[in-house]
Image (tube, rainbow, N blue to C red; front, side, top):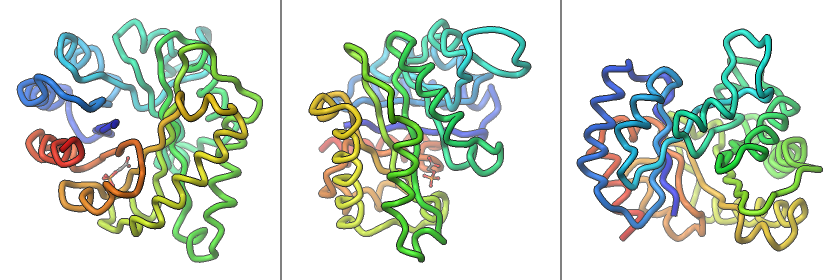
Amino acid sequence: MFIVANWKMNLSIKDSIALAKEYGKLFKKSSANIVVCPSFTSLPFVCKMLESLPVAVGAQDVFWEKAGAFTGEISAEDLKELGAEYVIIGHSERREYLGEEDWMIRRKIEAAFTTRNLTPILCIGESAEDHERDEREEVLSRQLSEALDGLSLGIGQSLIIAYEPIWAIGTGLVPEPEEIAYVTDVIRVLLRRYFGDRSDRACAVLYGGSIDESTVVPLMESGVDGFLVGSASLKAREFYRLAERVIN
Ligand code: PGA
């Protein structure tokens, strides 16, 4: 099971250090894969603090080139050098506010795939309008094919897909468990199309959007491999309780 904390741009460096310290105290051992994704500026501190603990660190974005004249961007190698093992790619907030398009997301996935031990967490999900028009499957299938078609999974390479319906992020709305189970299956079938049977071992499918310690409970039966958590990850105890519910 994966439980990924996306701190977004909610915390100062000082607050991120304090929260990482609390996470460190609570997660001394864990049978789940706990991943914390702080902002770029907090990343070096959080990586150092959680180094010897069973909490991995991820970044919230990456650029696709290795180096060069790309003002403001951060390479996959830089993330590795700091100690990040995961990277969120294509979050709906970046698609919406930063104009991130599928071709960019594809290049970012490729950059993570060609960096040793850096696992991409690819976010996909339909908008409220897509949902109303009953176009969810088409949207998800297009997002996956534009991000992944033609790429291959190298030896030891894994990929995490986070299904995050945009209408469920930060709204308190959560799809029914049966819907999440259905979408998870659809995603797994599509992944097999790109990566063959290997995808069953190398890929995990998570759900994200308004997950907290109560909304997570009914979703435990939906067959997902874990959760991507935003606001409920900003309080260490709350996140820990949520993780305990998932693990036990
Ligand atoms: P939320 O955010 O848990 O606050 O809805 C999830 C996400 O955006 O990854």
